Length: 192
Length: 270
Image 1 (cartoon, each protein chain N blue to C red):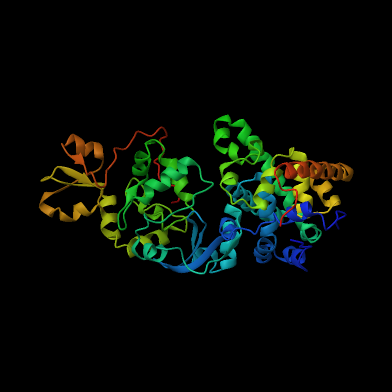
Image 2 (image 1 turned 60 degrees about the vertical axis):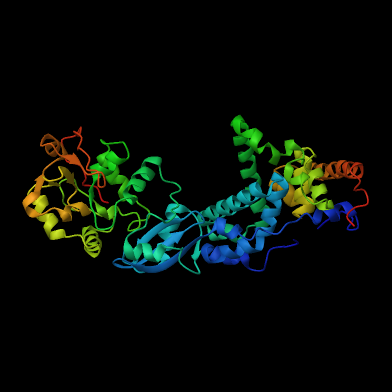
């Protein structure tokens, strides 16, 4: 997960998007899926979102001049695409109220109490993922990007289009809140 | 790059929430291509997780996988990589001309185009239907020219047999890859082109039997059982109906509809 960009991938993408794109998917599939899973909270939605993210990335790369590709910071770039797609998806769900009840279980509004969480093995990871869903969106996204997707603060600030200080305070407030939720849920010992 | 204490159990637990990509993520992203034998030379075929999405005869892309990929991507915008094996059923479908059982990915087409292709897919190998028949089948009997245009956009020719759709006057009409290829494919399916050309020239567009009182398209298998003494040909379904005949239930000849323009339809490539 601490991928800092495999040597030469952006250069190879810049030379030939098509031949290097499969490597992009295999190198960053985990990162993108993780970001999708922890922002949507639902594996099926996360898979859709991850696939769509790569398809958008592919379309974008085909339109970029090589210099632009060579200068890409791949991870934050992919995460930016993903968050935009997720925002649009939510907006669409909100506009189609008939569909909300069906999909609400996947939304943070359900506060991680969806059936998939309830029937999940009582593993600290599942519980923690559920608790994460109870944070306000801004704090949750900041924590997901910082501590699960492992982006740096400057990168997160760029991805979210906010000041670095804002990200830091969202992460720190979110962690405080999460700690409170974790101890209330009997998780204060941390994972064993 | 972190300033958080590494020993914090909470952040360590968060880091452990990183997940591996699902095994089939690649299948949702990449389309895959193969080169396989077709009815008149090799074809390139691209398919997605939903089904077959694009087909081009090798001759139509300069025998180049690279050009096929470029064409596919311009139309579908998906990355395309080689497949380890052809989609199930593809090779027999290309050999026999029976391709109804395959799954197709027609994402991006209008519902009209999809209806046209679905109706066209039901035309059996070795048989022909006029553009107007497709229009009637999809409940848009006046949309004859639009049917021609939709067939000209068929992403999976040969499998969805737009080559079996011909002009309403019985002549073959144009084709995505040229008229001569249309004729070669039909010939390979056993269509008796010289006889059909004679019928077309004589304005005999439907074949009936005076024993059964049924009229068919000339390529309908039922026509083969009509003996010369009992065969009656008609220029139109309406003329046959006036003479007391009814349309065949299998090949379903459709009455032609008065077109709004003076021009005769069906000259679009298909």
